[in-house]
Image (cartoon, rainbow, N blue to C red; front, side, top):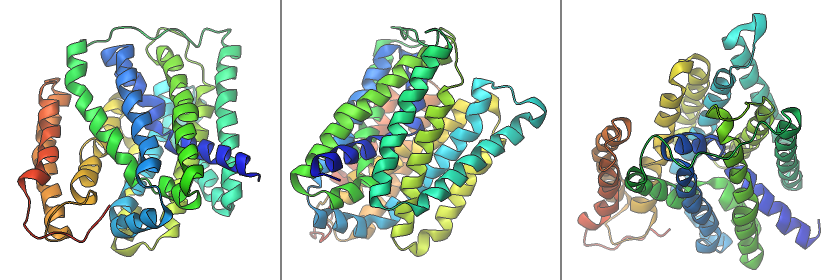
Length: 376
């Protein structure tokens, strides 16, 4: 590949690796709750946070050092991401209410997950250049899905999203800290980002991150804004959206599987397997009527535990060692979880920033005197 083509394909790789079932479906819930401004509050920290990784961790040595020091957390991050997608793929057929005929919902969901797992396994044959071409093909298939949705529904698959949702703008302002906390910090745990930063140092990497997230990824989540109305009953729900969901999920899952294979499993090997299996089981057997609850339960990991780890453990501060930092993380997450659950599930929105404040202030309150050798 030429250098310009390589940079462009890396940008597409980053965009597709970050287009999760979060980017593809969380906007549906946010627009339902808060109207179109919910998508804005989702998109802004998402794009900025992802692009910032390449500008903060600018050199391959620094990226490698980060991965070496935080490999256990990054492995768990990848495992939860894979599990999330298997849950999503197992449930989405029921959400769309696609006719399954004599197979039944369970068999259809199992077949969809098995097909995705087979495709993910096949990605194991890809080398670096193959992954870049796969990224381009994934983006092209998502674009094809969008075109077919429009064509096969005579344009009725798309409609403007509602300006207002079930909750007020004031409620969105209370909820926004959770979006910013999660999306600004979680990308630092993404092993696929670190791979690109290590393969593309300097300006090439900067361009890959900026173009990847400010152009391609932004376009993909703008697509989600176009089909939100379909899932809210405002426009026709066209089953071609499954092509977009499937190919992006396979790409993300395959990319994280590659990263898990590239580093030693350590003590987290069995934990990773348990997490992935749990995602498959939830995808098959979680009650379809409670799809959002299951979705939110997994999403919570990216709302407080993962970003709190980045904020408390990964960012260098004066502390004795990793153990005090980890303990601070654990206590802050334990304290924030019930507050966030009450605020989110009970719609007591002002409790959301309170729950986010706990991990934010935790490393300030807990400041051992001895400088740590740990760096980001």
